[in-house]
Image (cartoon, rainbow, N blue to C red; front, side, top):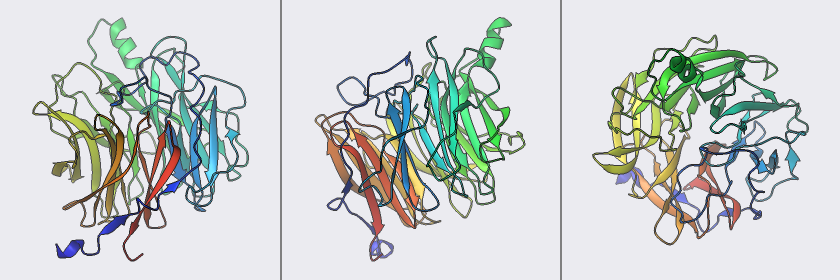
Length: 407
């Protein structure tokens, strides 16, 4: 097709392979219920890693190092990383397996923000922790717990994003309403989605603000800034009677979320959580591009679609029937990238699809493979280019640049 003559080429041969790292220390504390389902035929390692570019183009990664959250920075798009720095000086349990992993976000004035879930002794419970650096990552303040509620219940699967005004949004899955409903002897499906907001560069948070009741219990939340200065949340919801589709809502900085809307309509009915959250990005024209896993007509499927003005405009499966744990990023209104991993019976493979016409048509490329365990792929964008961070047990941290032909 004519429009694909200027297609993106994936630099698989010129992959930027970072220094391999040994597997992290064994789990500390109770991590029951935090692990995502894996296609690999072995026990899950705690490889969960977050990543973000800061305003100066440094690539930051955050991951578990024993009972610490460790960060490292790269000034060359992942060819090499600086020394390891522990965010929390005082050791504490850290969740680090796939949908529950340390996260990184960068502020507009050079701040580096880190969140993670701290598992508590009681199974399936936790606190959402936050630490910030206001000197470009040289030092980090002591971590704090984001939410005001300190009950020994589930506050888990944190998500973080910064809006165009520099406000920090942190969202999480919360079960306080489940406990309250049980005390009233009333039914309550799933959990709830809450968030908190900081307007002072993470010095303090206002919350806890509820987005919705009846969310799925163990799927990550996607937060995406919008071009008009708002924050969008996409999550797996439990629609009556028990359809595990996805919902979307705009989050007010004052704690007033817009009414949620149903975003997917696969009607997957199951009384369980797949540990498989969605990805979302909003392009400058206001279109929500999203990627999600569901079982559609009895077939496990990862789909990519477009949502706008309250309507799902398009949906198609990825070009891989075994696709799992996909992520999505947009470079502009037209260039959209999706990355995922899949297990072919021998290897876990990393693949990507790219559209340069706003998600109407796609090209697919295979990027890498590993015979050992691996984290979910994470898509990033900086300087008009997309990058995939993929951490594997055997190869370590790897960064794959996806570059436009002729750029």
